[in-house]
Image 1 (cartoon, helix red, strand yellow):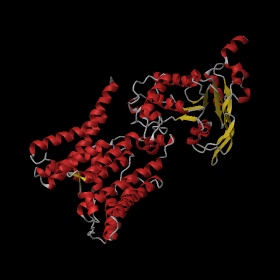
Image 2 (cartoon, helix red, strand yellow; image 1 turned 60 degrees about the horizontal axis):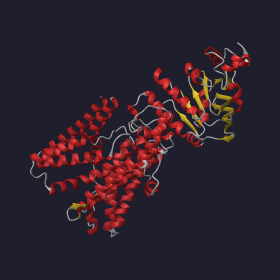
Image 3 (cartoon, rainbow over the protein chains, first blue to last red; image 1 turned 60 degrees about the vertical axis):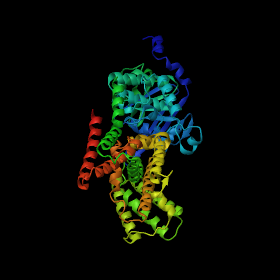
Image 4 (cartoon, each protein chain N blue to C red; image 1 turned 180 degrees about the vertical axis):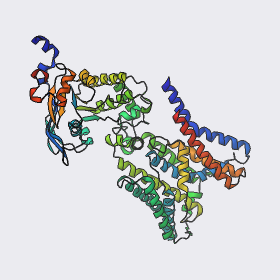
Length: 278
Length: 316
């Protein structure tokens, strides 16, 4: 392989450093009694990228994500958002700071409509006395915004006033992703967004995640599905033994290379330099 | 196409109770000459108003996926408290307001036990039902409280607006409009549906689910107490045993109206229709001279049929 083709294979390698760090974690430790879930884990996410997080069960993958989304509080270590240290006591805190999480079990209210779900917990009130005093809803505006928003993300759902339970699994996931993307100011975290979906629907959600990134929001994608990870990730964070084993470049390696790092068959110090993403 | 069908079906199903009401009214209009008279209809509406008021509050509770068994006892205790005040010469506006606030307070205790104490609504309100019934008997010394001596208070249950519309009917319609607005058009209403539909999702969206629950049970208590004021006024006395079994009528009205006991789906219009169905069924069976024993059997069958139809519609 000539140096030229390697550069072509990894067009980000020269420009990536210029992208600012949006979300960063340094030396996160989390213990549950005797068990150490996170043992000084680091993490970084740059503007405009999709960072996949992979790791075996017990590698500290979900604990790391929970710390980033505010679901757990680390015992020590630092989380930086846009360079500022932040502390999340609950997912609500993280959300307020601009980090939205799409949970694996689809956090939607099935009997409510798409528009209602998109604005769940963030309803727009009418700008008049009824709105201010009695919390009267501005339904028209929410419906209009929902339609515009779903079109922007190219989610092909015709009616915003149909109940979410009438949608397919992929469309429901689409609603959950759209909601997160609509309100996230800094980061969207997605926990196994394609796990419960068939091939076609999975691809639809992948396309949607790409759309979210292309609109400028960086995405953290937790997934067990290697083909999906390799299809859309810009970089791959490999969690192992409560730490980060490496950040890999999916364009320079094969899936079995990634699995080797994930399982420890390839020791972190032995990883060839060109596998790594910078 | 599929979706159209689903929505079509859902709309039809939603209107099911309303169609049943129309059929019932038409049937009675044909079989009983006394039914379709203004006098009889207003009378039915007045009888329905007490159950409807309780059922409006119960609708919110059931939308949350909860249940409130204590409404009958709340009705009795607030009625006893108000009657005691009236018989001691307290101003009727003050006495009625304190009675309703007391009912709201009892409901709030339900809400706190359920949300903060994480007690199942069935158990929490069953306990409160027994406690409050006991307190009604304690405060009234087990006897009816009479001598309310207030023409103004008597208006609440027995008065007329514009000469022929009973005050309780006006109250019922006003409260219907208020509850409709709250459920359909306010942030609070939407959060009630959200908590009942998927509590975890609601909490993750930043909705303060405990606060919603406490408010809903508080409202249910206030509505039961309001119904208690009307009953006390109608009877011109407070009975410590009043309201026994009213929780079941209210639940029946809510369920007949198509609100799901599992929470998250339902509407206040259905509850009004459900309450009217029960009231008109009672009235019609009386007019037709059906024995009160059979009336109970028929009412039970109607409730079961309604729920079974609702079920089969959902599976299809």
